[in-house]
Image (cartoon, rainbow, N blue to C red; front, side, top):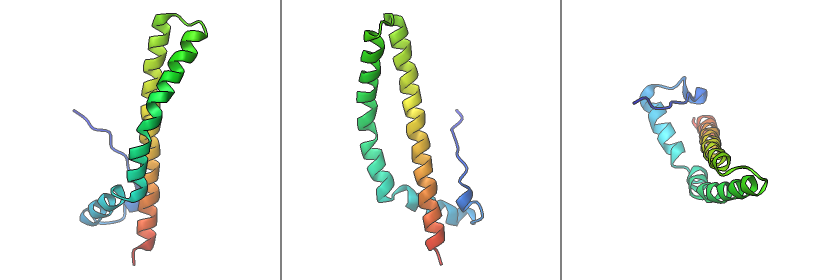
Length: 99
């Protein structure tokens, strides 16, 4: 199974061992931990809102279910992209603070 990998150019110039340590530290930062704790709280209500909006706007049941599945996919992709952006921001700050 292939995994999705994101390139983080802020740490590309570092040796692999140092890059790994830096990214693990950035991954455990309080900002990312808070985001991972808070972000899922918005996915459920957003899906319920999308369901009601589609259903009460006159969409058929099948179209509503398909719309909710598409909305879930989009929400998860957006959540992942925000997390990568926060990780890049943390990595940029860590590289700048490094002597």
